[in-house]
Length: 197
Image (tube, rainbow, N blue to C red; front, side, top):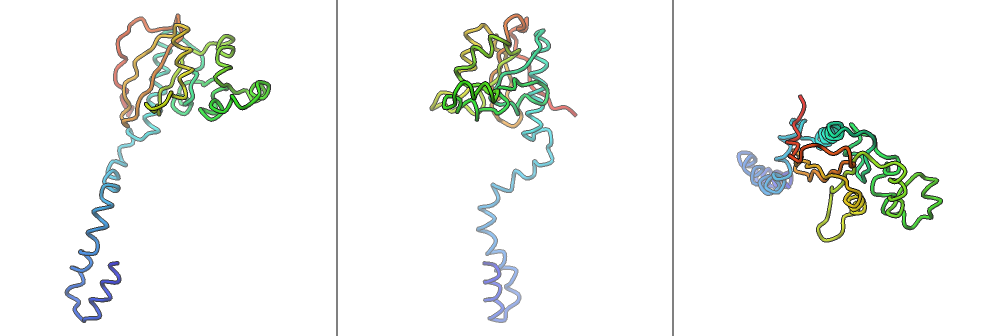
């Protein structure tokens, strides 16, 4: 648009109006783009990047499990959020994708692929209960969360819920349940997840 206006001004022979015409042509696009460009100033705040926040949360979950005297894997549909510092049960490595579609697959195929669905939780955890169960991310208030069966299992089997503070990115921190016998002695909140330097 600025190029077209520039050519029109040149056609009339007045070069003094070119800067004014260019400025007028740029005002509408800048007003639309400014809200999209303004967060770019925070790009240097590495500690607030989503990946860094996930790493801090993974290490925090690891500390909570160790402080509670626990050890072992974490059951979660969000392995990328805990994998930096915790082992994830292999049956949950595919995240929500396998878990949500497992009902459409035969139990022999689920076992062969080493996956898990809603109906496999009881037998899987009876053989090897996870040290912790983590979830609650991306929950939609209009429908039952996809990881509700994991939370239900944790509540039915006496897992203790531990407070997770909100992440610096503004994302929901989710919920964390620790296996019975490995629960923290104190019910106090753990505290903020601080960036490492």
